[in-house]
Image 1 (spheres, one colour):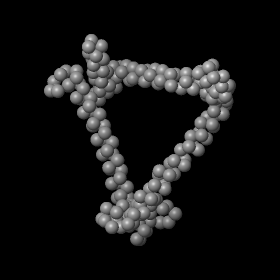
Image 2: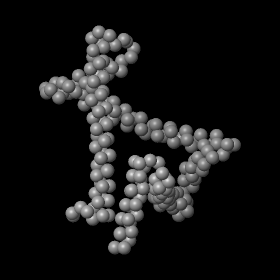
Image 3: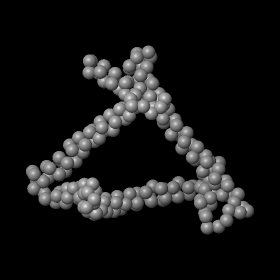
Image 4: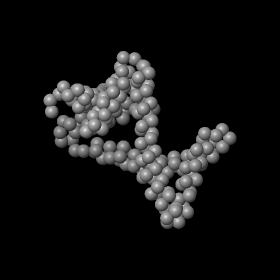
Length: 202
């Protein structure tokens, strides 16, 4: 019970310290910011130590005798040469592997999710007003990004319509972002007024 109370007080004080930035930048905010970064870094170092280094490097190497795990270990150590002006060029080797492997994995997935699936979702029967708006919006937006010809006449009007669809999409995205941030604020206010100050009824 005592540890729970201490945790609530620490969380409340750090929350207020972060919100103090709304007034202006100050040392209390910087302290809370540094604590957040330090705790997060320490947490992830411990997490990777117990979920990656020990089970995927130490155990296979020491207990299983798998020397192939020395290859990713060497790649990881070469990453650290980035901090040396003389040997920093060695970090390009593992970086090339990381970028190449990441691109090889992510590009097909991204093309499938952001191109093929979007095309498939657009090719629908025009049986309702929403489907018509969807197809017209996609076509008009694509015309807006057609920069090889001048947006004049009928093409210009379609491009203008595409601009309106873009603005609606951006507005909806911004509204969703604001709503998510307000939800976080509500959660913090409920914590401060309820769990900390006990001003809210359970």
